[in-house]
Image (cartoon, rainbow, N blue to C red; front, side):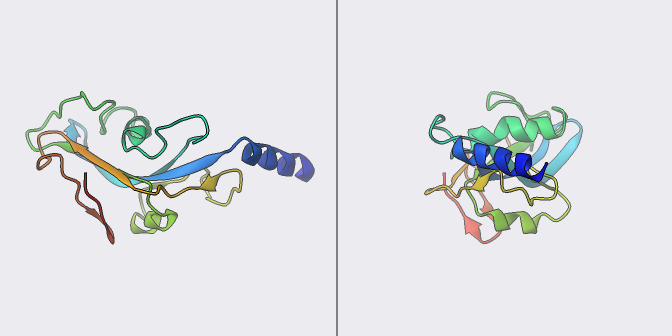
Length: 147
């Protein structure tokens, strides 16, 4: 059984199984409240050209809360006058430590070696909704990102 699991992990690595980090902040976007946290998503940079774009994180954050808190697309409008959704992609895995109660790894215990974490050469961020100030991104931990 252990050999089978080891083979499966090597097979995933051979396929280019890569994971990326995203910090999201959905503030009063939907009528059910707000959420802020860290999540990981799988993306193969050999096949997908958008692994390091913040738009890759939108659907991931939306599905975490069943579409009740975060938007499903950039074209969505916030329910509240001050609502916004902000995403930062391509940060180091250690950023997860800043969200001890709201971090979502690809594997619940974050010990799997099936995926290799990748940091983007240039982290991507974006903010949309009426609560954003000119689409500007805010500071995430020690990381200050521009548009």
